[in-house]
Image 1 (cartoon, rainbow, N blue to C red):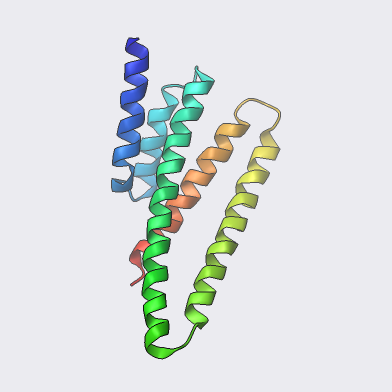
Image 2 (spheres, rainbow, N blue to C red):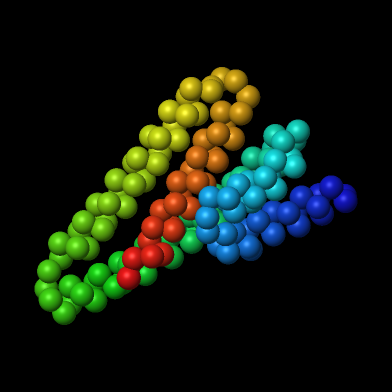
Length: 137
């Protein structure tokens, strides 16, 4: 019971505070929290999933923000090119992220740790994309 409460509290902490972590060193600190569960594959995987899901939500927020800004510009100037390229760049990012992380998974598989490497790769790349979108005005 105590272990379950501890697991839950770490997952909540990771989920609630992750957006406050912006640089690579801080990403490593968050990922290190999941390493406490390394002996329990299921809990470790759930911890990484929670971070990944939290980042996906944050990424979607930034995508919505930029899409809204670009749609407003379309209404003002009638040009759709920036919005189209933004959408294309995001689709290209998703494809690149998936392929980049997938080759890392396949290089390790079927050995233990392949799934972890994949999830950590997705986490790092998603955080980098969020960081990139957050500085664009």
